[in-house]
Amino acid sequence: MGKDVLKIRTAGLLLTGLVLVGTRSWASDSAVFVSWWNMGMAVGGGLALFLLGMGYLTDALKAAAGRQLQLILTRLTANRFMGALVGAVSTGVIQSSSITTVLVVGFVSAQLMTLNQAIGVIMGANIGSTVTAQIIAFKVTHLALGFVACGYLVVQLCRRDDVKSFGGILLGLGMIFLGMNVMSDAMAPLRDFQPFIRLMAEVRNPLWGLLIGAVLTALIQSSAATTGIVIMLASQGVMPLITGVTIALGANIGTCVTALLATIGRPRVALRAAAVHVVFNLIGVALWVPFISELADLAAVVSPAYPELSGAAKLAAAAPRQIANANTLFNVINTALFIGFTPLLERLVLWLVPPAAKTAQQPWAPQFLEPQLLDTPSAALGMVRLELGRLGEQVLLIMLKVKPLLETPDPRAFHAVRRDDDAVDALYTAIMQYLNAIGKRELSDAEIREYYQLLQVVELLEGIGDIFEGEIAKLGTRMAEQQLLPSAAMRELLEMLYGRVYSAVKMATRAAVDNDGGVARQVLAMRDQIESAANKTFRHQASSLAKSPAERLVLLQVEFELADQLKRIYSVCKRIARLFCDSDKSDA
Picture (tube, rainbow, N blue to C red):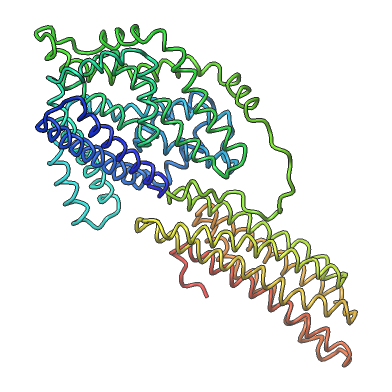
């Protein structure tokens, strides 16, 4: 979890505790004061356990889902219906609509996902976020300590990342259930406390319920926690169904705060993605305000009735499941209603967040290095791969510019090549800073391997740029200043060698971006072709050396150095390829 989120959650916990402690004014005697103080500490501690468990659970699920989560979000959202399904499933998997929304904001900002795709995913994310409430409502909290014990043992004793992730899931669930148990026990005295019962009756006013749900969720940054508290109160028979449903709807408004925080300092496209979340939730809640009673009745119809019970006992048995079902029905029905109006919602958001005035942007400024994805290392490493593609493209652009200059050397043009290498250096610096930020996160063994793999690729690609900016540009400048022109036969040989090295750089970059071992093997398989082209060049130079007059010796030396630098570039390509191809380590 990010530091900002932790600060917000901590503030929410403190405020919640203070509010609960402040209720001591409802009673006058010191004994009740001590009771409220203990209750405040218990509820605050239980909420802290719940949020800590949510953090463990989300981190473990993200580690287990890994790169698949990124691939699913960016590749399986071709239409709005598939996007909604993907949003629901992915959020159900990682148990956080806020995380899904932050990922979507990052992907939209990086132009990996369109706004239209993002709308469907955000709609579905609201459905997936109700899974936690459903689990809590099934009253499996008595398994809390067993889950904590098993999860802790698995995390401590197992070395495999996938097994550790499973242990983290158990540990997170156990802490969530334990936190719910602590809060439930702490709230038990409220069943007989008439001032609180009257207060809950007053909260039947929808505006108060929506405000409580929205503010509490905005403070603790977890709609699941808000809904969990509501369900725990309902399980004690002190939270009427209408009140619980209203507060749960308010939580859908409060959860928008996380999406808005994720847009700070981001491009306008990211702000639009967050605006989709806000607009969708606000309109959805506004539509249901006049029909909260009907939503509660519908939830009661699809929930167990417990006809054998009555009064507070019946409320305690039935209300938790009814509130959880109302929350799920609200999000499912809203998504079904709005999914057909995705284009209209997109136009509304585009109207609310119009394009910003165009500003001059450095062509080599990073496009994919989204800070909001740093707390999801697998997705952040995926962004690094995409930025590596741009770094490789810049190196290839330099190669394309240099090739004709070797035939008709121009010193001014070679100075321009040095400026082009500034783009390589700028991207290199940005990627290294981003990798440094990733390295400060907690990484799995697989992510650590990928991290160091990408670190080496960045260094090697930047090294190719330096060869052109340094050695080859100097040779070209020397050829231009001394008017050294290779013979037609030598130009043909150098062109063949240059073309093959260009292909090697292109494929090495592709192997790094796509993590493709097959392409990496193709780079290594080019060794014989490039060796053959280089040897032909060297033999031609050797035969020319004996026949050439003394004044051509300088040209032959430049040609030899140029061919040698091209071979050196291919050697760098082989080093990149070996990082993605374990079976070809014997290649020299």
